[in-house]
Image (cartoon, rainbow, N blue to C red; front, top):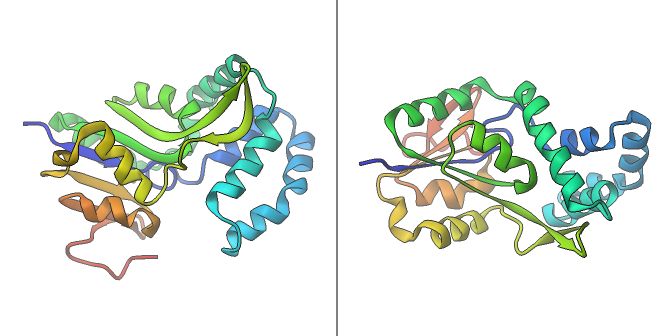
Length: 211
C-alpha cells in the first residue's frame, strides 16, 4: 500500500527561502524591489534576530509587494514564477528524495509556510497529491497582504495534515525538512529526516544535527 511522504519546501526541496525571490519576481524592477525591502527592513532584521515572528515579517513582505493587487494578476505572476524561476532554486538532494517516493507510488504531500499561491502550480508539475501551505487573504478581488487563517508553520503543519488526511495518515509515513521548526511534523511521522550538511539524517539515529 502507498504511504504518505510529507515534504517541507523552502530549504528542503529548494536551496533557499522562496518568498523573497517570489516578490522580487513580482516587482520586476530591482529599484522597486530594493526600495520596498528597505522600507520593511526593520521587521526583517527583527525576524532574523528572533524579535519578530515569522507571521509578522511575512505579512510585512506581502503587504509591501502584493497589497491591492487583483488576485487574478497575482495568480498569473505566481504561475510564471513557479514555471520559470523556481526550477533554478531546486535542491538536488531534496528532489532526489521526492523522486524516490514518487517511484514507490507513495502519496507525496507538500507542507509549507510559503504561499499556496505559487506552490500549487509547482507541485502539480512534480506529482504532489496535495499542497498545504499558507493562504493569503483576498478582499473584493484583491490581495491585502494578510494571511488567511493560520501561518502553516511548526505545529500548524501537523494540524493541517491531520485535518486533511486524518490522524491515521502517520502510520508508516515519512517526513522531510531542513529546520527544527518542523520537529512537530518530523516527530509525528514514523520516520523523520532533517537535512544536515547536504544529507537527510534520520531523527531516530542522530539528533545532533538539529539547528
